[in-house]
Every structure is written in structure tokens, then in C-alpha cells.
Image (cartoon, rainbow, N blue to C red; front, side, top):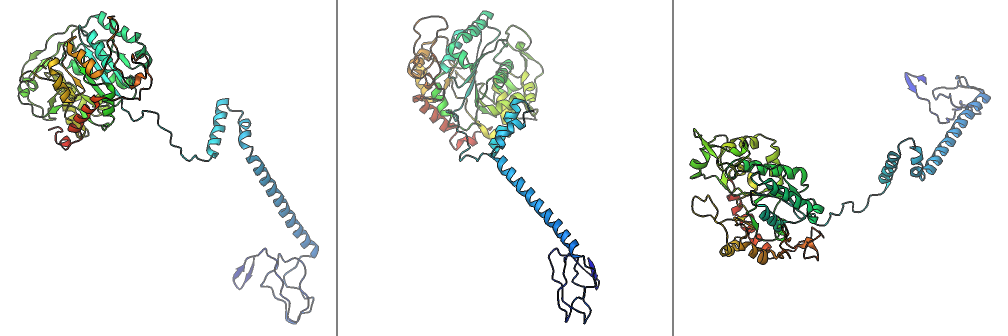
Length: 489
């Protein structure tokens, strides 16, 4: 770079022609790498006049040109070699990569190669996997509990309620003899269908359950915990007793539940306590079932307590159908409300009729999800509705008109149960009177085998007239304008 009136001129690698002096003859020969456009020849100079800038000899200029040409040639050859190597190796890269990564374990090397193949493959037109058959059908989780002398009717109710898509927890409380509890476990283990499906769970360490005390709530939460841990995927939890019985098939129930939003909780409830304020909410009791090994009645303690101010009390039916989301909230209790209410209801008369109602209605997240119904047909005796009327054959029209999928309370081996089996469930009678020999209610999962000795396809449903009755009930309690107006009032 040379100075020219205070301005620097950058050297250009291009060949520049030298300016001829005025009157001069030939051009300046040799290389132009050091030519400066600011250099001038003196006026009147001759033909051979040279620039003031010193010029390289022609041999030296040729040598410089040769070196540049040699470097350019070598660069071009190197570029071509790299391009050819890249082109030839791209077709064999995947096949050679396994040998290149041979120092890795075999599985890791194979995974690397497969990953590279997947990365270089063109995406398919439709990458969305096809859902398995029956993916949209719900799954139910049942608790069926009983006490002393309830083994056979619990077994009968289990078969009337059975479907391989569902989960079941069966429990005979501690008042039942050890022989009955062992017999129940043996029957479940020896059932071919139950053993293959693996969806019937027996509570082997029995709980002491007093209906009017908190032990029934504890037993229900125990079953919920078992189902959350061992029950796989399910959508609703339903608690029943051995004195309950279905009024329609599981195909009917699953078919209608598939049309219900999965966040709807079925809990009969009211915030108006009425006479229950003085007889349920204010007295304080102790449940001996929490401490003893024999069932005893509750006993009262003094003084009475006032109504709480941190939350509002609700009451209703002890029989519920709860969503999995609400069950997880109840069992895991990620805020303190479930535990607080559990301790409060420990000394509450008939806590099963208030715990879930009060918990849901004091949790704002779940208030919009509650349907004010327990999915049961129950005929109460006289006010104050403390004991249900035992159902009989004369109550069949009322049971059908209710549209409810379940009813209670049924006496042991009452003829009304046979009428339900024959007229509503189409369940075949067992061929012999062997103990524990009970037929399943036929459904789509049985395939062509009327005895249902194996599971065909558990997503095949064959709904019958019961589905239409249940659908009308759901329309009244969920798909109506009254649905939001009856929530936690």
C-alpha cells in the first residue's frame, strides 16, 4: 500500500496495465503485482523510460506467477478429492457406520445406526398412530364390600357386575369369619376368567367397618388407593355393597358412560342440613372399629360441637360414582383439605354421608363437575329417611322407571334377584348347585360363547333396553339446564 496525497490505495490482485508516458513508445514489461496507479513517468521520457517504482526482473515475476499457479492447482485438486470422497461415502455411510462404531456395545451401535436411518428417512404422510380398538370406551372401577354371611351374595353381585374392561376390589370386613374371607380369595384365584384378566383384587387384610362411623370412609379410601396402584387405567370409581344389585348389564352401563364427560362426579348432596344438624353434625362420637377387633356400636361423647366456619357442611348419599381425577385428589391430597376433613369426620355421625360431599363442594375446582345423583334406586321408609326399604318383586316397576343402573337394598336370595337375572340381565341359571357356581351376565366380550368361559374382545358392546333407560336418566341429570343449578346448593 502506497501513500497518495494522504489516501491509501489498496493493492488489487487483478493485472493492471501500466500507463505509457506521453510520447512514450512501449509498455512497461514484467509482472504487475507491485504496480501503483499513483506512479508517473517524467514528461518527455523515452520509450524505455521506467517507472520510479522499482520493477522486479522478468524471471522473478515469472517465479511468483508460477508459485501462485501451483498453489491454485493444488487447492483445486484437494477440493475435487474431498468432493469425490464425500459423494462416494454418502451412499455407504449408514452401512459403514456400524463398523465405525464397533467400539460401542452391540446394542448401542445398532441403536445409533437405526437412529441415523430414522433421521435421514423422509417423513411418512400420516405419522399419527392408529388408536387400538375400543380406545374411546370408558373403564369402571368397583368396590364391592360385605360383612358376615355375605360371601355368596357378594359373589353373585360380582358376576352380575363383571366385565373384563373394569377393575374390581372385593372386601369382606373383619366381622366375617376367616374361613369366608379365605374362601372368597380361593374362588377368585380359581376362576379362569378372573385369573386371565387379572382385574379382581381381594382385600386380604380385612378392615373393621361400621356403617355409621368413619371406618366405612377409611375402607372406601383403602379401595381407592389399591385401584390407583394396581388397577391400571380407569375412569370412574363406584362403591357398592353386597346388598346392591345392577338393574342393567355392563354393556348398557359402559355404552352410556361413553357419552358422559369424563369429569362428571355423581354425588347426591345438599347443603341444607335440617334435622341432621342437631343429630349428625353437632354430636361427637367415637367409632370402636378404629381401635378394636370386634364390631360395636358407636358411643357418644360430650360436649357437642358447633358448626365449622372454615368450610361448609354438605350431606347426601353414601353411594357415589367418582372420577379418577377427584379420587386422586382425595387420596393424594396435594392441598390440606382432604386430610382436614378426614380428621373432622372421624368423630361425625354417619360420616360416609358427608365426607365426599363436603370435600367436593369446598374444592372450587370440582364444584362444576358434580351431578346431584347417586345412580341408585333406593326406597326409603319414613322420614327422617334413615333406613332403606327392602326391595321386592312389587318394586320392579319403580326400579325400571327410575332409570338407575343400581338398586338397594336387596334381602339375601330374594326372588326379586332371580327376576332381575331373567328379565333384565338375561343371565343363564347355573347347571348345578355347586357352591360358588355362578354364571356371568352375557355381553359382547363373551363372543359366541353364552357361558362366557373366555374373553373375546372386551371393546365389543351389545347394549340392550337398559341402555335406553340409563340414557334418559343421564339426560335429566347431566344434559339439562338444571345441571349447573343443582351443584353444591
